[in-house]
Image 1: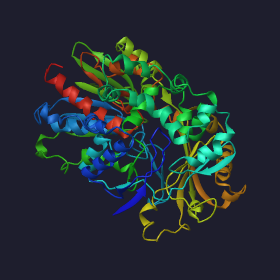
Image 2 (image 1 turned 180 degrees about the vertical axis):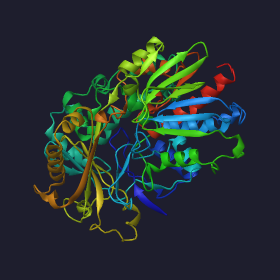
Image 3 (image 1 turned 45 degrees about the horizontal axis):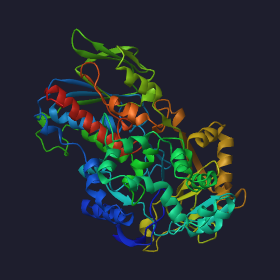
Length: 578
């Protein structure tokens, strides 16, 4: 099934136009995804980037091209962390016959930061508190989605019709951005030159001009982890988003306008400009998809495959495959080098076991550096990695979902008529994400706004997420409800009889994460990224996780890093020169 839509403004540095093209609603083929990406790159004037983006985001080579299937039979590998990085590493290493143990501190769910919360027993109504979208260019993610035959659904809505509520002014998001130019420009003391430029051009100048000034070859460095970079690219990684805007000559009022209209960028305005580059380079917010039934179905697919004696995903005889053991509720609190035996010792605890030790030939550590910081490491890893463990920046992020007894936002009224998409605001909640599960029924007329629905009532970053979450539950929910009502122009108290249940996840206070995702401060990619990936303990300890990748905060980063770490382990095991 397909639907013709007009390209929606994402306010993340995307050139705006009204070019219509066809988006497959469900399960796009590789060819369809590639065509969508080509169209989008053509629209922003960078068609030459297509091959580089696809190549750089494609999964690493299959591990069986490095080592023979079954060749690591009897080799014991410990994996710290059972999220996507740990599962993808285990999935690949199992092909070599290794005996794998996955330690995960979580005991009530699986998936790491992939966190789908179901409000009903039928698992029809849910909120995504971790990743919630899959860009068409994230090849490694699509590799595993296709491998496990998971169904995907487009998030591109032909009738998103969302709000921007900034400076006490409510407008509808429009593809041209004319509403911003007309109604919001007068609220900010822009310079004469800024006032004369339409929003579409001002936004493109702020987000895309420096990216476009890099040559296509240098742009590929955005998706590479290297010991050194070109001077042109390195310079940009040492600047924050705010510093780039200032360098471009934008006034502080123009910067405030940008940060208000796009509050998710505004919440990260002091982080490295390179983080903006890596999302804009591959147009990560255009033509995104979700996994049908919840994003957690991807880690669940890994889990069921890894515990199966007869998995369908491997094109190998089952006797060559290794065994995978999950230890949920087991906290690794020590990583030690056993020099005499050339092994790695892991100390771990659970509710029933205290300070247990296990011996492994190799270890892959996938947990965030924010939690690795408190693990006992003897001897220390190299000094720069230890510094990265102490300093690597993690974004605070909060999501609150309302399970509503009807979809007031879909009503054909001044405050509704929305299906999917995001509303942005300069209020503390920053953004409101609307469920996309009615997009498919728009063309058939079978959508019913009287059905229940899950509204992500607040999704915000950094200071606003900390301030909003650092309140008692009653006060927090009251503030979010009032903010949602204000954004929609609803009377105070309108939501009191609409909300059946609610849930907040603030990733800073999630015990085994302490941050939503890694996000570099200026200079951190140059100082840390290459060293983070280097093995430790004489090539016995390897590292994976979105924090070790060029795609912080995306499933792509976690999956690619896990597959890559497995390959690197196999390379060192075989003594291949690298």
